[in-house]
Image (cartoon, rainbow, N blue to C red; front, side, top):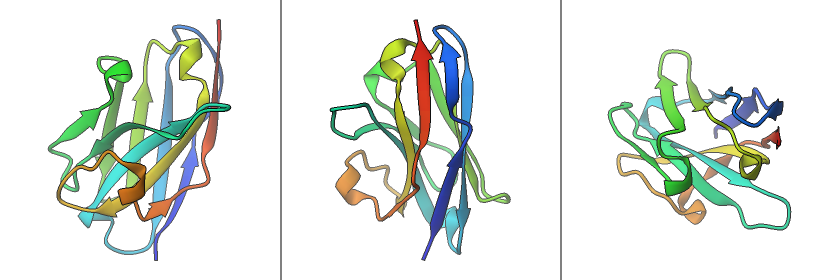
Length: 124
């Protein structure tokens, strides 16, 4: 069993940066693909990006490419989502999720473990 706890959300202005963290409690963190998803009000939960178990590969949805980046620390069992040049349409609850590696998966149905989310609000 794996417990995921996100932190770092908040209210920021457009153009600002924010870094989200997700700590995993349990075993096998270094074997998991770690993903970030987000859900805006009235919308489906969508894939933001993910990182391979060893951190050597990442994948992002088109709308965040060049602005967001994911990193992980397998010693601290933590994955990070660095968000730069934030826009109002990035406003959402952000969730981290874990699935067994090694392949990066983009569909939420493939992720087994989920955090409870952290709210990000970007004002214009």
